Amino acid sequence: MINILYMLETGGPGGAETVLLNLVSNLNRKDFRPHVVLLKKGWAYERLKGVTEDIHVIPSQRGYDLSLIVKICRFIRENRIQIVNSHLEDINFYSSVAARLMGIPHVAVEHGNVHLGSLSVQKRVKIKVTNLCTTKYIAISRYTSGKLRDIIGNGRKIEVIYNGVQDGTHRRAEEKSDVGFGSEDFLILNLANLYPVKNHKSLIRVADRVVKKEPRARFLIAGRGKLEDELSNMIHELGLDKNVILLGYRSDAERYLSACDAYLQTSVSEGLPVSVIEAMSYEKPVVATDVGGTAELIDEILVAPDDVEAMADNLLKLIEDQTFRRELGKKNYLKYKGLFTVNTMVSEYERLYTSLIR
Image (cartoon, rainbow, N blue to C red; front, side, top):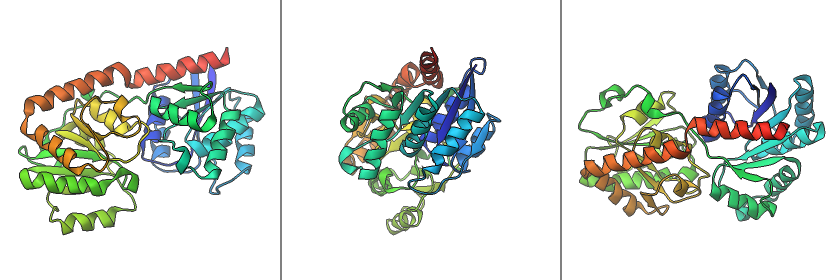
């Protein structure tokens, strides 16, 4: 049995946390034993606690906390860890150095949309040091792989493993009434924390256009974040209080995925959006911005960031044309089944772990 240490710096909820949860939950326990170390408690800790007893917290708050490397080395030694698999750039840096010092393989996973020009000197240093120390760099999309190459200079260590999620069609189907809406309402869902990069202001502008032609449209935003008050004021000023609903954080987001008619992503930057994969797994039509690796997920409907008119027009077409809506949902589901299932993702990681130990 191979002892694997999984590390994550954030508390969630979010895409990286969901991927780690799916990976740990579905790992073959006959061949692999997962140990999880987080830097803080939160959503990820509570969810992971339900799937593994080997979960620990090593607190760290500073930007450069070199003592964290010592603590990771101690954990590796005490638990006879054979592989370290970390997610996100800060913990990739610390854990890759620790793994190198302890003489064991390290797998670093980059989830973001990495732009060389937008990175601080500190972040660029961390990525380059990680590349020196890690055994494998996993990019979650071909797009992210290309951006990593721009930073580290070569792709010898880089491998693409797509994110995977559970099949939504296997869950209990939810009716619109189950989530508080009428059968005549057309539900358009967005799952994203309320940060500028998710571009919710454009989403609200899209809603303003759509609702003027289709008053039955309901835009549901599930997520939390620092922009909540600002977005709430914008919704009120545009008179959209009945049509744009801020749901806040929802532990039952899958119920809304099941009940919605369409999914809308308005982000200006993504690596490979897990929420879009989740919508595909529920056989939903998707309107998304053509950013990062999103084009590797869906072939249509992709629009330029901030092209409010195109997003609105495509949503109106989905509202009006039920046949097109169903066909697009089925097409998205088939793409999901071919590349983005949780079983496919886990098998790829298991193959990688086995190859590193040989």
